[in-house]
Length: 303
Length: 117
Image (cartoon, rainbow over all chains, first blue to last red; front, side, top):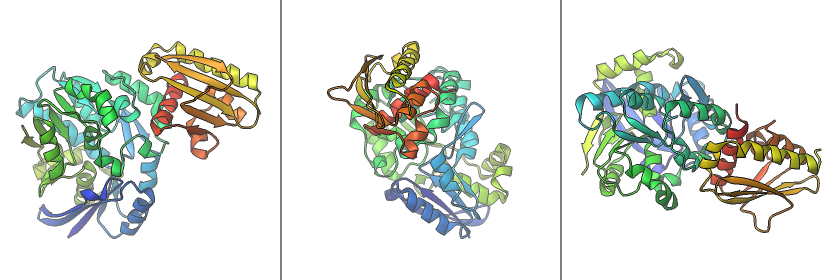
């Protein structure tokens, strides 16, 4: 049996373990949250190193992208460098393939994403592939990176402006402690009511709200049937979105026993299956494997 | 060690960079803050006032600052001239920014938007 573990800076309340068979091989996939405790995450990674088949890093990104430029989040890199023997991934490789495919899938197979759909991406630099896919399908996209990560009420409306601002700011901002830019630990369990009042209208102006679930959740106002495109949702998250009035939930990663795991987990599973060093794995490798595994987005009608 | 006048000049350069950036003014239209800039190695205090996106500077301390920026005179002058970004001195403790985390991120962002590559 192959063991894949996701070590997350997120809340331990979301911990989960499942067993699945893929290509006839049994996988034990588990998620272990460290409640935002960076040192605990490092210690857990060191403990798992060499003892499991692949590790995913959750609740944090190591690599952000804007255009062809890659920015390295220093806290994420420190976590990655704590592991020496076991392959370790942050999900960014898979995001670039799987999440693009999800957007194309929605256009081709559903009526949830017609041309000119108003899309709010709460953050795009952590899933630039998805951002490019929405834009390529003639959606009217608002990139909320400044709004939801820096508290600046400035909606970015083109990928070019996103790249320009990223080029000026990300090399330095990626050095800040990650918790200053993204909700970690207990912050993932509560909503920021003040910012919901201030920024909630951006959600209501959109038909589709896409991106990282913790960011979406933290600033989510009562909705009017909007579609949510995200990943890493638990049964409680689905109930939360239903209660808030979301119309559909689309998760980019497959469901295992009632929940969709993060891209870091699925990428770690794929790395364990591919048996290739991570730097040698190409987007085509992921795409081929996705086809063979018949991974499709999960679409749930909520209201 | 920089002199008080050098810090004043650096703040004027920062103000000029800020005020000619229309986009930055728009971004900060909602962010009214009074900021104390204080050197910890020479007697030097300035006040930055952000109101409706406009930035003004005064010599001397404010009555009631929302944010305090404290560092040695050299770091302050280098930072407001854009020779260094605030991130490194902030991370190594040379620069102290007393305010909410949101305010710290926002100040860093403003500085990078003015002086970033």
